[in-house]
Image 1 (cartoon, helix red, strand yellow):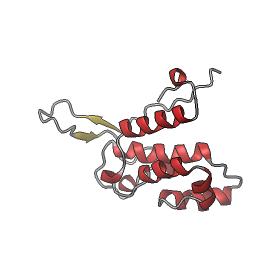
Image 2 (cartoon, rainbow, N blue to C red):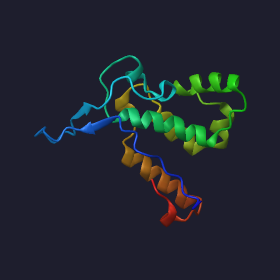
Image 3 (tube, rainbow, N blue to C red):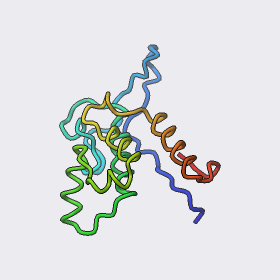
Image 4 (cartoon, helix red, strand yellow):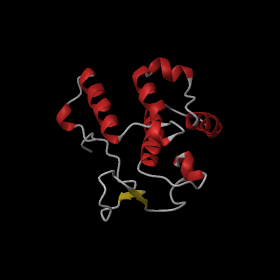
Length: 139
């Protein structure tokens, strides 16, 4: 164990390289795949989706890494609330900065979710303020 945390490729969307436009047009990679508890609202409702579904899932994973859910019942209640940006009050007091970015990541509207580069920059800033070894951080 090297102490590094790595989140793998979610593999949900990909860039359409055949598109001549420079607007990062995306095509669907999978339909109705993945773990439903981590799916973004637009996936659950069957709407067209893009790379922002990965940001939603990562927001849930980030929350899950920071917050202990002791029982299955608690997990069900807190998890459903978290999917709607309603994080426990104690979480927001304990993890104020993380609470801000996670809420953005869990925005219902994909266009309100941050880009992966923004999340990475926020995590790097957090690591610097907490004196974590920057060279070991893999985001």
